[in-house]
Length: 210
Image (cartoon, rainbow, N blue to C red; front, side):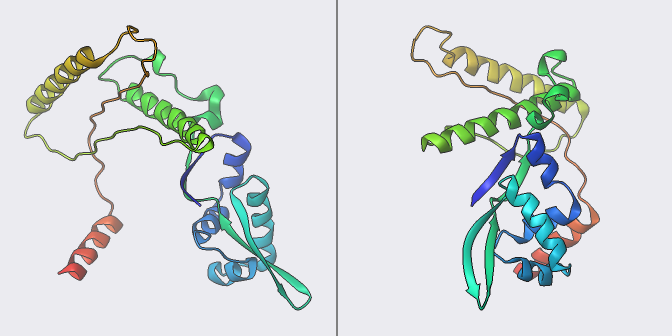
């Protein structure tokens, strides 16, 4: 089972959508049969079988084992991944194009860059897995707060200058034939306010750890 699977095929993306199929994929992080799923999800086995066939036909559910129980063969299946991301490639004709914006202060450009990153990483991960080679990536995720809009603007300016200096320092610029091209994306955006459920979950976890 993969940790994350990027779905870039429109048919597979369509097959993955829907409340019941989402619940089935979530439950199939652990192998189970249609009968077991019916009990877990409290749905008729016939309905579970219908959705399982659809998910299996596009590769989102995989056969793990077949067991004989009397005159019946029980099929044990599992989701192909623990979680899924639908790539903008699944909607290639209408996916955002970063070249349409090119404004470092545009949220739409940032979103287009993020969409391109999902698309490219999905293809890179697939290629690296097929070649049985590690994929060289690096990421930083940090939370910070600013006391004023002025401080935020100053931070963004200094960050841009620093990153530009690093790019100028290390960018090969085509001088070396075997140079390996990479893409760098730096993003800064406000964080979402936590939902009531997230606040309650965090509070409960904190109390349990005390």
